[in-house]
Length: 367
Image (cartoon, rainbow, N blue to C red):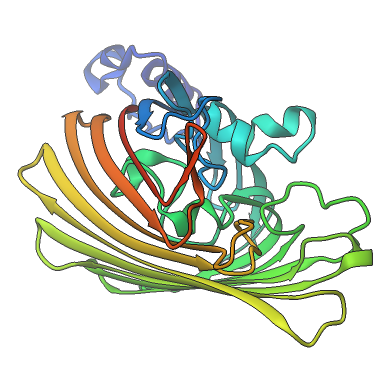
């Protein structure tokens, strides 16, 4: 780039591109492609639980939108992303009730890290990368970012599988974009730091197939021990889902989680859990959409959701959702949701009941 081109580039960068026209200084304009992108997300909400919990915290297996009868911040973060096609990095700092609930086991400022990772491209002519750090989870179709999900609150299978993870991964995207394949080495099941006494690394995989723009099929797994080695119990977990956009207005997501963990150290027996979910979404127009969800979660032995009852945690859930896109980057949402368990696992005042019904509204802004 010669001197005149540098001047032109500077003028465009600072917003004075009109002075860099060929007619004025007789030089060609240079296109600027910044490698650094700053973005952010804020989601506030209000939830009312008709069981009216005394501590204003919803049942312990909810990790998002879990405050009752108060206006709260679920998730707010600011993110810097750098990518020059050969090196990439992401750093996002967050706050909110999501962070308080999901990162309760992490120490100090780690609780405020939404994402912090760096990667390098391994092949000049192939989309092959290795990345390391703290990432959003490779498991499931729902994330902590509510605007990207079809329902306001997260499904039971999403709230009780990893939202985030730390470690290293190698990933490949095919030239057609139809295949994505990744292998991961992780610090544990939703962990930034491994528990004291745990010397075992965990592993995972992800395979995503998109035969066309309307179909996504995904398989993800986790294998590892998430306890101190003195009580080592191997956990095996698999998530699969399919997302289908049948028309411009109507779409469907079907997901299924299944997992098993050793009953005790060196045991040949396993405790298992599973969870199916189905979500249908219909766009009324370019601003409004509705969605309905049906789900079930079974964890008889309390591997993930510890409930001290005869049948453990066996719960059906139903919800209905309405979205209104005020602007392209602003969405208002309303959801009614009800859970029905086989045992009386919910608390209503001093009474044990088997149902939990609640409504939630949220406003999400991205920039």
